Length: 118
Image 1 (tube, helix red, strand yellow):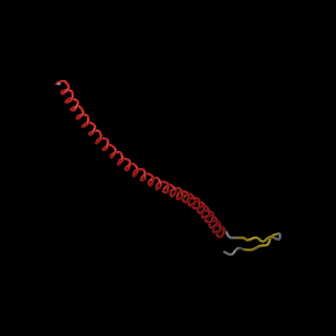
Image 2 (cartoon, helix red, strand yellow):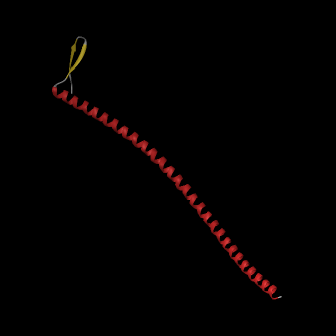
């Protein structure tokens, strides 16, 4: 595309044919379209980067939560073990106590019977 160059009042004017003007208009429209597409894509990239950062922070947060929940579970298992041992010990002491009460009752019964017989 070579324009016709003309001088008008100390200004240089470039004249194009109608076909050349249409081509130039199409290129300008394409350039504006490409610029707007680039702008939209840059906005989408910024949004995706923000979403990626948020997702990564959520993943990190959830990993910490999982670690903490695992520690809580271990502590609960240890506590349950201690409670079971305590319950077993109390049951053993309760059986001994019942046995002692029975022996004491028998002994008192024998002593009372002997006391009454004499």
